[in-house]
Image 1 (spheres, one colour):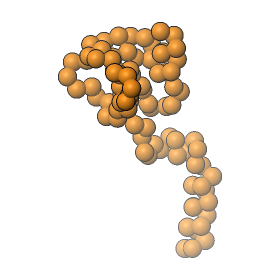
Image 2 (cartoon, rainbow, N blue to C red):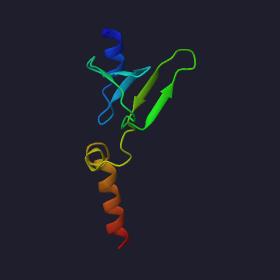
Image 3 (cartoon, rainbow, N blue to C red):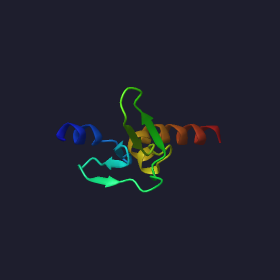
Length: 86
């Protein structure tokens, strides 16, 4: 149980993984729920050898906060080039 929770608890901001076995899903905290119909996460990875699926939501393609945090230097560079071109 601890190894499954550790694998599902990947530190990607905005992404949550769950393990689906039959009609049950196991979350990163070890919570087990019965899947009723459609689960809101859109991406799935099926095992070809075993009967389980990893379901997750994709990371956001554009995040303003991630842009400021990771790409502040490129924003300044683009601003300087735009000012020089004007």
